[in-house]
Structures are given as structure tokens and as C-alpha cells.
Image (cartoon, rainbow, N blue to C red; front, side, top):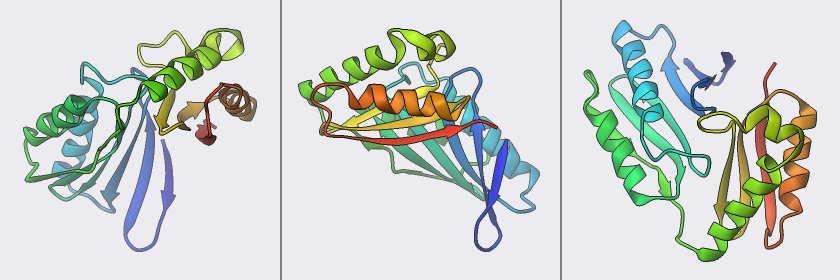
Length: 183
């Protein structure tokens, strides 16, 4: 777990979810209560267990006392509502703020998603290293032809390979590489 401090009394922790390959951001108040720690663990569990959460989605959350804020981007509107409903029923959660963005429906974006997936996971080192997980570690978010890569990779070289392979896909306007290198 990597912890970086921000202003005031908050810490942001990024966890690599080994069973899904996704990153879930969580904010925990310094000296947080046992109830808040329980909420953090349960929210993580509920989001990982969502049946339609995949490589083209990115989910994150923040916990502030008994309020959970959901963040990220998803390709299906039902995934946004499923995430909100799953978190709502956790013991100790009083309020859920669902700020998950539903990506626009676009045949062009769907084509780009598939092509970037093939470019990253179709062959080579990245396919061998990251492609055999239930949900691969590199998430591909496409909005209006713009690609954002999110996740955790083992090395700076893997991060650069994913970036170059994504930029080589026809129809991609830009690539934002938000991949983090695991230390």
C-alpha cells in the first residue's frame, strides 16, 4: 500500500486489488475509527464483486466518516447504479454520493477500446504479464476518441510500452498515461 500525505488531516491510499487488477482510491481520516475502516474494506469488496466490472471501466471511492463518494468512469449505466446500490447497503454507510461518469455510447469508441485492448494484451510482454487476470491490471478508458490508461504496472518500461502501443491505434486522438509503477 502506498500512502501519500496531502494538506490537513487526510491521507490518500492507493491499493492494488490483486483479484481484479484495478486501483481503488480511498480517503481515510487520520486516526479513523474502526467503523470507518470497516466501511473502507466493505466498499472495496462490493466494488470488486460487481459482475460487469471490466477492463474498460475504472472505479474509485472516497470514505469520509459514514459518507462514501464513488468516482470513476464506466461503459454501462447499469454498472454505475449497481455500484451505488451495492455500497448503499453496507452497515455504517449513511450517504452515498455517486459521481461515476457513464461514458458516451459510441460505436467509434467501442472500436477503439477493442483495438487498444488487442494492442496491449494481444501479444508480447504485456499480454504475458498482465493479460491472464480476471480483470487485467491496465484499464482502458475511451471517451470521444481519447484514451486514458489507468492501473498499476511492474516497471517504467511496461508503462511506456502500453503508452506507445495505445498511440499506434488508428482513430485515437490522444493517450493519457495514468499508469503507476509498482515499487
